[in-house]
Length: 444
Image 1 (cartoon, one colour):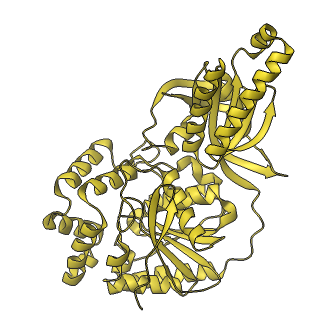
Image 2 (spheres, one colour; image 1 turned 30 degrees about the vertical axis):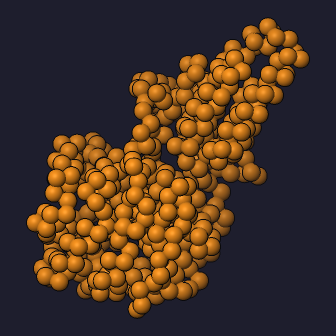
Image 3 (cartoon, helix red, strand yellow; image 1 turned 120 degrees about the vertical axis):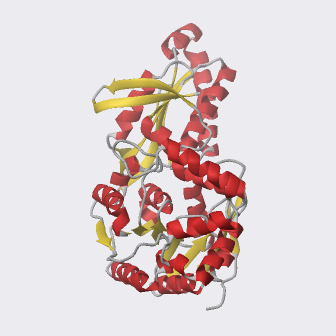
């Protein structure tokens, strides 16, 4: 197979390098689980064979994640939301309306968040050794502890690019592939070309901070979870929380890079083809993952009485203009306006936080103070309106916010890990009419 040409998709200010392999009625987006370099991959025949196997089922889209390979470098650790935007940018660049998302390891978090946020653009999800969280937690004991991550990040910072270190890494990740001297030599240069030491640290810090546990129940696309025996429990955690997910253990496969073991990778590719071939037409999705935002003016009744009806109406109109301007700027969807409050939805929690903060700062020029509450959850879309428990949850959080405060649920906080947004713990609260206790955080 000839090496496909490299093109670039624009995701905000960042250029994302991608390639298109094959043709077919179905698009398959390959989200790799580690650092990668598009061109270096084609120097390894086993990897090429893997891509060719995927291309038997449709048109394959490969891309280098921001901060790696041929894509633009980045100055800060990218968030899951940002990287989800990169995936969408690549699909848009090749006019892909819907795709099967084939993702491995850490890349599975991008695919799961995309599938939950954009169900109308997701035909199916296929995951290999998926991880839902990077850092150890009592209900997620498979991830590395904070101490283990600190050691790993120090090693990467100090030794990335060093041949001995990369050979050690190859034996740890792919014991079968590392037995082959040609593969081992390729791996060392592949990793060096994929990222600089600083970029490698940023990527692995992002892997540590990501968490999509709360997103899993919102994934409605047909899902296949493939895994090694070593990853059985972690894969089961994901599969058990995605409705209708099918889980298949590939016996005898022990390599992180499945394609490094062609005999057992053939089983993985066969399962992939059979799953894609079995996809039937799915009805238009009526549920979507969204970040809900509620805002309202603090002390509006007193201010209205002080100004009088005419002056208050004029001030309220100016407030609404400012709010709507920020909603457009941050891609928010206005869903309702009641008196002095707004109800809006976003396809990413980071944008929602930035919008809420921008609204707060903008309306201060009018002598007004607002409070805002945000929550990310599954919503039902009926006749263009969003409903479901996520909506009243967002409203109840907003009601607890102090003047000038942007208050968010723990789900929102987890999804923007790595963004640089800082929070102050506001403790656990009960939300009227919403089951359970809720940990809330104020944006600082």
